[in-house]
Image (tube, rainbow, N blue to C red; front, side, top):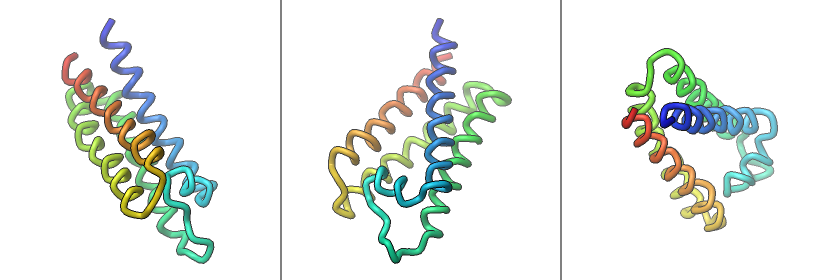
Length: 123
């Protein structure tokens, strides 16, 4: 019973990363606003593209680890990835973004990713 829930949660988190990455590639300014730090109109869009590639790549790597390497490798990967939304939370807070986004999106994501990590280590 634990294995399908664990794989489902981990896969959902990875798919959400792919979605966020695609959103930053396809609608970067809207994605930046949702991230909590809106992009400046005259800003360099390359940074938004980098974020899209980073998040999309992490999501695809997580899915590949789940499919081909199994729970231990996916758990170690997820443990490292937990640091990314924590860093995103700090970025939002340091740049005057909404605390609701910092904690409600980024911190909450890190907590759910940590839960997925614990579950992956448990199976």
